[in-house]
Image (cartoon, rainbow, N blue to C red; front, side, top):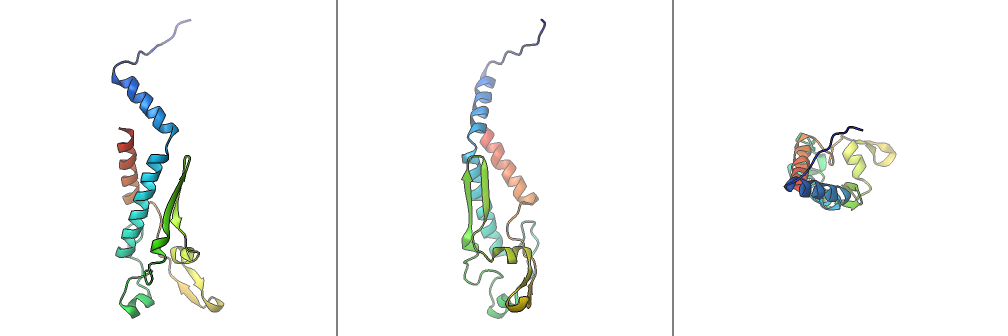
Length: 140
């Protein structure tokens, strides 16, 4: 039976072995990506912007107190976290009210207040590029 064989020699074999080993243990790179996403969200809270770089609609409460939108007590911003288990990265906000601010919607007594969507977490081109850079560095 005829076949094709490839002889891998030099440093290629050790690099392929390293790549295979890293692929079986992705926790370190996922943790680094999670830490980047956490820092990205915290920075955007100070800039009052979405993952894509668009400004959030300024809130009436922030206007009244001369502060930043969604940062009265910093409780929401301080709830950002990530968790890595095996090959899974979870990233998000821990406060129950995070979703109403992220997606917008009706809230308050009798749903009398309508909040605009102010996307907080997410991956757009800015974050995707950094994630790709982290992975590229990890593979080297």
